Image 1 (spheres, helix red, strand yellow):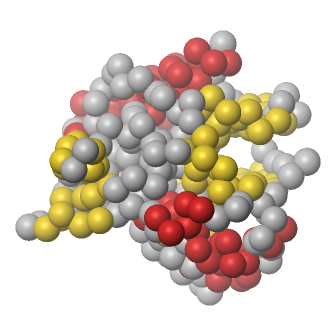
Image 2 (tube, one colour; image 1 turned 60 degrees about the horizontal axis):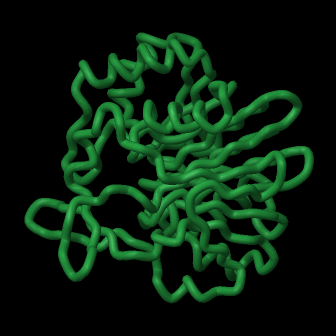
Length: 273
């Protein structure tokens, strides 16, 4: 399995662009997957520079209904007319972020919901025996402060986002299990516990954002929270690759706890499993 980072907030190479967003290209033995498409068409331009063919992608997974993960969806659908696009059925609802004195819309383009490639799903969904998606993560541990500036519209009212629209990807290949997260708004500890409930084990690899930093508020989770997460990740004994909404500061603190078991994702990075 090869995982290439098409979009992340930072970059490792000249000739590539970066933006606040995430897009991962995953090449397995049987199929090619795109996990999120960043905030714009930048993922396409970077893919061309990295010799990655987006038109050959078999499946696109959108992790949740925020623009920094699904903003490039229209560009993807123009480039790839065959892939199934798996999106949670709530991902096209209205989502907002509080920024200074304004409440900004950060949702997806609702016009795309009717596209024939879109497959609306919920709960636990199996694409095949090696590829599964799960949502409905119970927020039973460590509610994240970095979510406090994020909202949703429900029955005409603006309320705190509960992230029922967030889903995660499980990939099995060659005896290894990989968990891919978008932002882990539901908390990486909770997501890993949900994974364990489903799989009766922990993953070998975890790749994606942990949302320990808020772009809207500009703040990070407390050292105490990050340390508790770091201890849990240590006990889970996976290999971790993280970036985007994890934040550089929180990543460095996790690195001091996990050492070689965690690495940073940047635009242009390549992981071979």
